[in-house]
Structures are given as structure tokens and as C-alpha cells.
Length: 226
Image 1 (cartoon, helix red, strand yellow):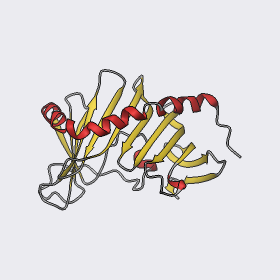
Image 2: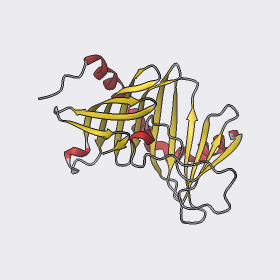
Image 3: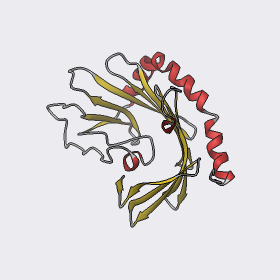
């Protein structure tokens, strides 16, 4: 039996789903924009930070609900040896992330992400493959009064749209739609779900997912992904 998710929250998700074609177009033209982004963003970097792995993400709760769950640690200075997975982040003078580079096992080959901040309430990330500079995915974060309201990622494999609700400064509910481009993939790869998030003190503690077909599952318990 389908779950009756409140219409106000569903309409919010539905609104951002209408922006998927825009993200598709951005993805399609991303390779053409590489040289422009590279030339415009790199000169704006005021300082760099080196880490032993990915530390920052445009997607809210990326690390808490992601596969690794671990943020990279900051090096005190530039490491002499750039191991595979080493990251370098470039920040603007006002502290915004502008550039992300991920080193690979192949010398001279680096994945690059450009963070494009706009005058309006959004930021767009362009993620490029090494060494051919094909675009892996394009992400956009939508802000309201500086707080993330929605996130869209359009990638080669599929698209994901998430919306966020808060109690105070904490995300307590998410609406999420995931769709793969390849229709031959199992149906479980594409879904719409609602996540209810609970905390213990300042720690994300439990996350329960309810899917559009009525099924429910816990995906995080005692701070650990299941």
C-alpha cells in the first residue's frame, strides 16, 4: 500500500524534480565549459588545504549517509608524496570552496571539481575525470537564507534529487528521488523515499527510510550504516 506522504513535502520534491532537465543540459555542456571554469576559478583561489581523503562535499549529510562515513584529515602542510586519494582544496578569500583536486595512482592525472557560486541562492559543482576531462557529474545545492533546501546531482549513471527539513539547525527529514538512466537495471536502483533522522546529543543516531511502495527499513543505527 503506498505511503501517504504529506502533500506539502511531496510538492517541494516535485518542484525540484522539474529542474532535472536543466541539470541534464548542464551535464551535456559541462565538457565545453571546462576551459572557462578552469581559467575563471583558479585565479580566485586565496589558499589551499591538503587532506588525506575527501573532506568537504556539496551534498548535505554526504559523509554521514555515504558509503565511507569518514572525512579526510587535514595535513599541516603540502605532503611531499601525493598518494592516491590525496585531496587539495582551494578556498576563496571569504572561505568558500572553489576547487577540489583528487590525486590518482597515475602521475599527473588529477580529478578536478570546480565549485561555482552564484549571486542567487545556489552553488553548482562540476566534477571532471582525469585525464580526458569528461564530466562525471554536475551537482547543484539550493539555499534559503544560507540553509540547504534541496540538492540535485545529475551523473552519467543517473540522477538524484533530495530536499531537506529542519528542526533548529538539524536535518530531521529528507525526501529523496533516485533514478538510473539505464532501464535494464533492477527496479531497486530507482526509488523515491522519505528519511526520518534522529540524533543522540550531537550525533546522527538513527535513520529510517519509507519507500513509495510502503516498505520500510532502517539504514543507520547507533551512528553506523547498516
